[in-house]
Length: 219
Image 1 (cartoon, rainbow, N blue to C red):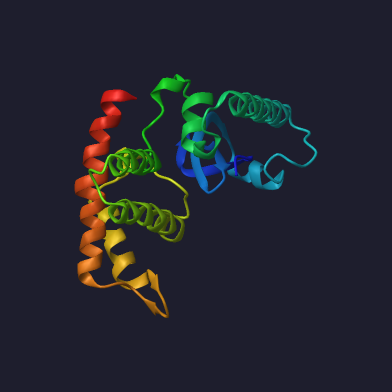
Image 2 (cartoon, rainbow, N blue to C red):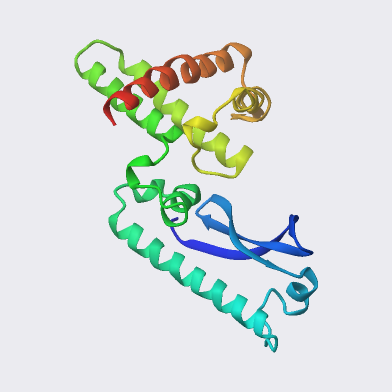
Protein backbone atom coordinates (compact mmCIF):
# COMPACT_ATOMS: atom_id res chain seq x y z
CA UNK A 1 0.00 0.00 0.00
CA UNK A 2 2.73 2.48 0.98
CA UNK A 3 5.44 1.23 -1.38
CA UNK A 4 7.16 4.04 -3.28
CA UNK A 5 7.55 3.81 -7.06
CA UNK A 6 9.49 6.50 -8.85
CA UNK A 7 10.32 7.01 -12.51
CA UNK A 8 11.56 9.88 -14.66
CA UNK A 9 10.13 11.03 -17.98
CA UNK A 10 10.29 13.92 -20.43
CA UNK A 11 7.56 16.54 -20.26
CA UNK A 12 7.21 17.52 -23.91
CA UNK A 13 5.48 20.87 -23.33
CA UNK A 14 8.32 22.13 -21.10
CA UNK A 15 11.23 23.35 -23.22
CA UNK A 16 14.30 25.46 -22.60
CA UNK A 17 16.92 26.32 -25.23
CA UNK A 18 15.92 23.35 -27.36
CA UNK A 19 16.06 20.94 -24.43
CA UNK A 20 13.12 19.13 -22.82
CA UNK A 21 12.38 19.12 -19.09
CA UNK A 22 12.88 15.95 -17.07
CA UNK A 23 10.05 15.30 -14.64
CA UNK A 24 9.58 12.64 -12.00
CA UNK A 25 6.45 10.65 -11.23
CA UNK A 26 5.78 9.42 -7.70
CA UNK A 27 3.35 6.56 -7.13
CA UNK A 28 2.27 5.35 -3.69
CA UNK A 29 -0.56 2.86 -3.61
CA UNK A 30 -3.28 4.13 -5.96
CA UNK A 31 -2.11 7.75 -5.74
CA UNK A 32 0.40 9.53 -7.95
CA UNK A 33 1.77 12.98 -8.71
CA UNK A 34 4.54 14.56 -10.76
CA UNK A 35 7.33 17.02 -10.02
CA UNK A 36 10.05 18.89 -11.87
CA UNK A 37 13.67 17.82 -11.40
CA UNK A 38 14.90 21.16 -12.71
CA UNK A 39 16.98 19.33 -15.36
CA UNK A 40 16.76 19.30 -19.17
CA UNK A 41 18.04 17.06 -21.96
CA UNK A 42 17.76 16.62 -25.71
CA UNK A 43 14.83 14.30 -26.37
CA UNK A 44 16.87 12.28 -28.89
CA UNK A 45 19.58 11.69 -26.26
CA UNK A 46 16.93 10.57 -23.77
CA UNK A 47 15.58 8.05 -26.31
CA UNK A 48 18.95 6.84 -27.61
CA UNK A 49 20.21 6.11 -24.08
CA UNK A 50 16.92 4.44 -23.04
CA UNK A 51 16.14 7.18 -20.51
CA UNK A 52 19.83 7.29 -19.47
CA UNK A 53 19.83 3.59 -18.57
CA UNK A 54 22.26 2.45 -21.26
CA UNK A 55 26.04 2.78 -21.10
CA UNK A 56 26.86 6.48 -21.33
CA UNK A 57 29.86 8.02 -23.02
CA UNK A 58 28.94 11.70 -22.93
CA UNK A 59 30.01 13.49 -19.75
CA UNK A 60 26.83 15.55 -19.58
CA UNK A 61 24.72 12.40 -19.76
CA UNK A 62 26.78 10.72 -17.04
CA UNK A 63 26.47 13.75 -14.81
CA UNK A 64 22.73 13.92 -15.39
CA UNK A 65 22.29 10.21 -14.65
CA UNK A 66 24.28 10.56 -11.42
CA UNK A 67 22.02 13.46 -10.43
CA UNK A 68 18.82 11.50 -11.07
CA UNK A 69 20.19 8.42 -9.29
CA UNK A 70 21.09 10.48 -6.22
CA UNK A 71 17.68 12.20 -6.37
CA UNK A 72 15.95 8.83 -6.37
CA UNK A 73 18.09 7.55 -3.50
CA UNK A 74 17.30 10.69 -1.50
CA UNK A 75 13.55 10.25 -2.02
CA UNK A 76 13.70 6.57 -1.09
CA UNK A 77 15.45 7.48 2.17
CA UNK A 78 12.88 10.22 2.86
CA UNK A 79 10.10 7.70 2.21
CA UNK A 80 11.59 5.14 4.60
CA UNK A 81 12.00 7.76 7.29
CA UNK A 82 8.50 9.11 6.79
CA UNK A 83 7.00 5.63 7.16
CA UNK A 84 8.73 5.28 10.52
CA UNK A 85 7.29 8.53 11.83
CA UNK A 86 3.95 8.71 10.04
CA UNK A 87 0.97 8.31 12.36
CA UNK A 88 -1.53 7.26 9.69
CA UNK A 89 0.37 5.12 7.20
CA UNK A 90 -2.81 4.19 5.35
CA UNK A 91 -3.25 7.86 4.39
CA UNK A 92 0.27 8.35 3.01
CA UNK A 93 -0.39 9.59 -0.52
CA UNK A 94 1.94 10.61 -3.34
CA UNK A 95 0.97 14.27 -3.01
CA UNK A 96 1.50 14.23 0.74
CA UNK A 97 4.92 12.65 0.26
CA UNK A 98 5.83 15.24 -2.38
CA UNK A 99 4.80 18.04 -0.01
CA UNK A 100 7.13 16.70 2.66
CA UNK A 101 10.10 15.33 0.69
CA UNK A 102 10.31 17.77 -2.23
CA UNK A 103 8.40 20.93 -1.33
CA UNK A 104 9.61 20.64 2.30
CA UNK A 105 6.29 21.56 3.85
CA UNK A 106 6.06 20.70 7.56
CA UNK A 107 3.99 17.69 8.61
CA UNK A 108 1.43 19.98 10.23
CA UNK A 109 0.49 21.34 6.79
CA UNK A 110 -0.89 18.04 5.53
CA UNK A 111 -4.02 18.56 3.49
CA UNK A 112 -7.32 17.45 5.00
CA UNK A 113 -8.45 14.36 3.08
CA UNK A 114 -11.97 13.20 2.29
CA UNK A 115 -11.37 10.11 4.44
CA UNK A 116 -10.59 12.46 7.37
CA UNK A 117 -13.98 14.11 6.95
CA UNK A 118 -15.93 10.86 6.68
CA UNK A 119 -14.14 8.93 9.43
CA UNK A 120 -14.38 11.83 11.89
CA UNK A 121 -18.05 12.31 11.10
CA UNK A 122 -18.76 8.62 11.72
CA UNK A 123 -16.79 8.77 14.96
CA UNK A 124 -18.80 11.80 16.09
CA UNK A 125 -22.05 10.12 15.04
CA UNK A 126 -21.20 7.01 17.10
CA UNK A 127 -20.86 9.21 20.18
CA UNK A 128 -24.27 10.71 19.49
CA UNK A 129 -25.76 7.21 19.13
CA UNK A 130 -24.21 6.13 22.46
CA UNK A 131 -25.91 9.10 24.14
CA UNK A 132 -29.24 8.30 22.53
CA UNK A 133 -29.25 11.53 20.51
CA UNK A 134 -29.20 9.76 17.12
CA UNK A 135 -30.41 6.39 15.83
CA UNK A 136 -28.00 3.55 15.05
CA UNK A 137 -29.66 3.17 11.66
CA UNK A 138 -28.67 6.72 10.75
CA UNK A 139 -25.07 6.00 11.74
CA UNK A 140 -25.08 2.92 9.51
CA UNK A 141 -26.11 5.09 6.56
CA UNK A 142 -22.97 7.21 6.97
CA UNK A 143 -20.81 4.10 7.25
CA UNK A 144 -22.34 2.89 3.99
CA UNK A 145 -21.73 6.30 2.43
CA UNK A 146 -18.02 5.98 3.29
CA UNK A 147 -17.90 2.60 1.55
CA UNK A 148 -19.66 4.04 -1.52
CA UNK A 149 -17.17 6.92 -1.70
CA UNK A 150 -14.21 4.53 -1.55
CA UNK A 151 -15.65 2.52 -4.44
CA UNK A 152 -16.38 5.71 -6.41
CA UNK A 153 -12.84 7.08 -5.99
CA UNK A 154 -11.32 3.75 -7.02
CA UNK A 155 -13.54 3.23 -10.08
CA UNK A 156 -13.79 6.80 -11.40
CA UNK A 157 -10.39 8.26 -10.48
CA UNK A 158 -8.23 5.21 -9.66
CA UNK A 159 -7.30 6.68 -6.27
CA UNK A 160 -8.01 5.65 -2.69
CA UNK A 161 -8.48 9.15 -1.25
CA UNK A 162 -8.71 12.80 -2.31
CA UNK A 163 -7.81 16.13 -0.74
CA UNK A 164 -10.85 17.99 0.55
CA UNK A 165 -9.75 21.16 -1.26
CA UNK A 166 -10.05 19.33 -4.62
CA UNK A 167 -13.72 18.49 -4.19
CA UNK A 168 -15.63 20.73 -6.59
CA UNK A 169 -18.83 20.73 -8.64
CA UNK A 170 -17.32 18.30 -11.17
CA UNK A 171 -16.63 15.82 -8.37
CA UNK A 172 -20.26 16.05 -7.23
CA UNK A 173 -21.60 15.61 -10.78
CA UNK A 174 -19.28 12.63 -11.35
CA UNK A 175 -20.49 11.11 -8.10
CA UNK A 176 -24.11 11.64 -9.14
CA UNK A 177 -23.50 9.93 -12.50
CA UNK A 178 -21.74 7.04 -10.76
CA UNK A 179 -24.61 6.55 -8.31
CA UNK A 180 -27.36 6.86 -10.91
CA UNK A 181 -25.84 4.75 -13.69
CA UNK A 182 -22.86 2.69 -12.48
CA UNK A 183 -23.26 1.80 -8.81
CA UNK A 184 -23.98 -1.93 -8.53
CA UNK A 185 -27.25 -2.69 -6.77
CA UNK A 186 -27.96 -6.39 -6.89
CA UNK A 187 -28.10 -7.45 -10.52
CA UNK A 188 -28.64 -3.91 -11.79
CA UNK A 189 -26.42 -0.89 -12.30
CA UNK A 190 -27.40 2.45 -10.83
CA UNK A 191 -29.67 3.43 -7.98
CA UNK A 192 -32.85 5.48 -7.84
CA UNK A 193 -33.02 9.26 -8.06
CA UNK A 194 -34.25 9.74 -4.49
CA UNK A 195 -31.52 7.51 -3.02
CA UNK A 196 -28.90 9.34 -5.09
CA UNK A 197 -30.12 12.69 -3.78
CA UNK A 198 -29.90 11.40 -0.21
CA UNK A 199 -26.27 10.35 -0.74
CA UNK A 200 -25.37 13.73 -2.27
CA UNK A 201 -27.10 15.67 0.52
CA UNK A 202 -25.49 13.45 3.15
CA UNK A 203 -22.08 14.11 1.62
CA UNK A 204 -22.30 17.79 0.66
CA UNK A 205 -24.56 19.33 3.27
CA UNK A 206 -23.71 17.22 6.30
CA UNK A 207 -20.41 15.35 6.35
CA UNK A 208 -18.30 17.79 4.35
CA UNK A 209 -19.61 21.12 5.59
CA UNK A 210 -20.03 20.30 9.26
CA UNK A 211 -16.93 18.14 9.63
CA UNK A 212 -14.72 20.53 7.69
CA UNK A 213 -15.63 23.21 10.23
CA UNK A 214 -14.88 20.80 13.10
CA UNK A 215 -11.53 19.78 11.65
CA UNK A 216 -10.51 23.39 11.10
CA UNK A 217 -11.31 24.11 14.73
CA UNK A 218 -9.76 21.08 16.41
CA UNK A 219 -7.05 19.54 14.19
